[in-house]
Image 1 (tube, rainbow, N blue to C red):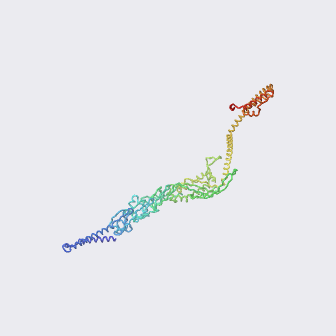
Image 2: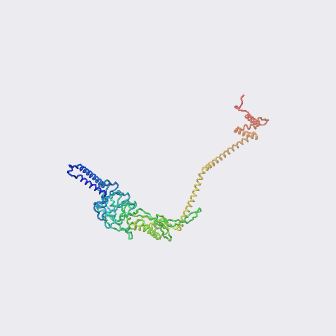
Image 3: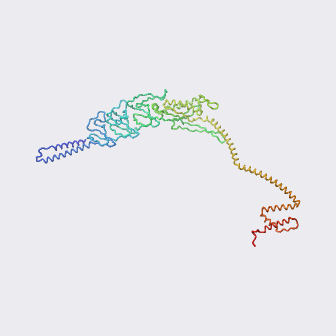
Length: 599
């Protein structure tokens, strides 16, 4: 304001000085003081110009605004203008107070803008990815009766309606806005709009395998809303849920498919429903008795009792289900496979709250009851003949403990049929029911196990005996194969011995014939020469034959027989001996031609 006063003072001074400078006496030019008057007029003119320059400078310094590139200039009028109407906060026609128009980036010349207004600059609004901006309008029309939030602005008008002047003159409502700011950069009038961006304004993401059920607190303009009663199954005790079309207040009949949605959490509540196949397990929570059977080295069956604790896993739906059959309390483990059809998701949310609530509040107690009733009553089983073959007929009889093993399929089928009906009432589909390994009292199984073990031992002993026999045959065959060479050699040796025996027999016969003939000759010779002389001749022949075979004996004979033999008159043998001695002596003493010394 001071600058405005100074500007006006300078402007007034300039005007006054200019007037004084032009005022003067027409006769002043011929009077003696004409020169002095002229000088005074010049000074006043210069002062008027200077005052005008000061006024222009002061005016210019208060008449421009420079807005930064990432900011928006906001004006709040202080001087000049009328007061705002009652209930209004933002001025549209230049009234005092926050102005509807904002200044964009750059230089703006507005006369006395810095004098008449308070100028503020606010950063642009940036909405990051994955979030939205929640809007609250501080001015506008009153919200329609029966609503707590301004209706959503159509998508094709959002950009225009974010302009303050357009919003206030084209039917914008004050208060919380259903419309949200999607990710992006916005230059908004911060006097008019409050923007909230935090961890509570994140996008609603429906992951794969899920659907989003919407409970709306607002109604879209122009939508024909009509509530309908929907039920989970065609049954008198099925869950009945009121649902509405999309865009109406209440639970929408249609669901949101997987994707990202920028929903105002104040206007819409989204519940994610898992439509994937789920497995509920009922297991653990009991102590299992076991009797182990073993066989010692002598084939005797021994049994040992032991206990195993069966804890309930954290991910299990509940503990194992205890059933009473033939007076025995037997824990039965169960696995149930379920799925929520997408079209039933609104009924599940509206009727119970979610799949977890259905599991805890409805189906788990129902499943336990059905299993107890089925296992403890009767069972429909196929009839078998004496040979154990199926006869093609069925009979219904009281359930037995061993049916949990022998006729498990029949029990599972009956339980699954009954649970499937109860599941449809709650809005879910039962895909499969399977029983786990039942903890049957071991006393009921020992006799069967011992019989099976004895039969197995009998078969094992029979096979072992057959195996031993085969092994002996194999070993004998292997031994015969290993001795085959010796056996063949022995056979050949026997044949050789037989041949030698025959040869010797033949040689003996020949020798005997030879000796017989020789004996005949010797007898004839003895008759002529005499017995003694024949003996000497035979001895001599043998000696000569030996010397012929072994000439090295000649020297030895030479040493033993005298060189000179004196004979007396007698028979011819003495002469023969002398000749033999001489021959031997000459052979031993006469050197060979090669060894004879030279003369």
